Length: 287
Image 1 (cartoon, rainbow, N blue to C red):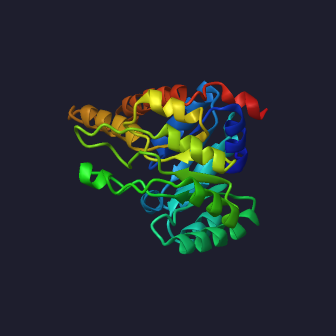
Image 2: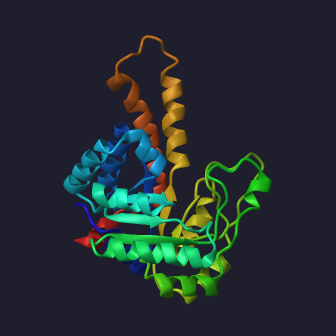
């Protein structure tokens, strides 16, 4: 069942679970994630970053939407970290049901102006919009110094941003980083800051860069307003590490022999993440 992203998140926010947003970059990943979420009776967001869209091509989105419509659980197809207005226009043309416009690296007023422009276009077509205040560092953090580039979300700034833009959900910076954490780095979520943000803005909050954070902290963040958690690196590590292992056998050459073990490794990660987010069986709330 293909749905608007805000419908997914508002229910999750009210019921205190989080919808997993898994980034996809090939057909095997897509099919495996949807099938696993169906088996767990869990709603899901299929995130596609502009770089991932470059890889899979526009024609891939038709298949993604068809699979989402046929799914037995609610599914949103989401533009992840669109940085340009043109990224959003591409998502509109392709039929996405949710977009993220990431102007977090812009000056505050420029972020508001860009996000408000996206909201006006997307809401006219029943697409939900996620904005971002604060930053969580580079796409793949390499060392502790890069991790220190985090700019934490300020509650008062978040309140102004939401009021001025009309976004449906807000990505916040409370201590995570993008990608797999470098060796020796121990991330720590600022749950007290999250609670302050929640009190300042009454809408679903989003956690980016959750790969590598302790499960207990992620689960606790869900109890304090996080209604969507982006998951990319963890499922891709599981998937591609298993592919590398399988491909050490030189006799294997058929995709139907090579891909299934990698998909199963990824699906094990999906099952674990869904459990941490308290989302197992949560599709019942949408029926």
